Length: 166
Image 1: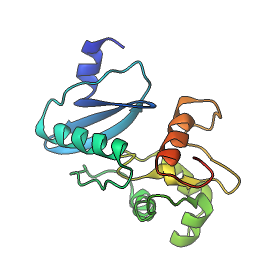
Image 2: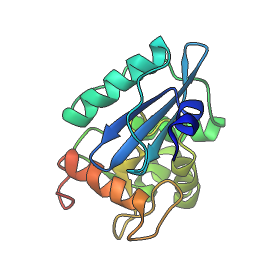
Image 3: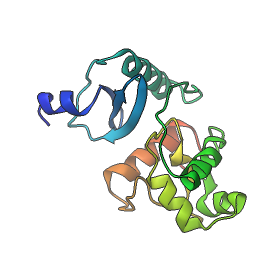
């Protein structure tokens, strides 16, 4: 992607071992965090909140125990927010299944999976810590075993030293 397009799309881009992470900010809030393929290159933050996000993403990518503290824009339905709160409670090094989350919030696994895929703030809301009962499951609305997004999920779980994914 040409750098002028990157400049318009993202307020900051942080390089990662799996590619990159894009940050969109507006009016002092993080609007979205996006996994990006290796064709995207680091971009300096264009505002203070994007700089704060880039610094925190860099710290997490170096230390999986790092805890985010970012001003997130309101997003999602009440149900999605309930799922995201349950996901946010999963400690580093652990995973739960879509069914585990569904039982905890009295819902269905498919609905939990849809809410995971609709997460505007991956890493901050660690949806990579949710797997299928029989394996990795999907990620970012992708279930292609060889695809970019599942590669990111595998990398994140290994980074967090989740047993069975290291």
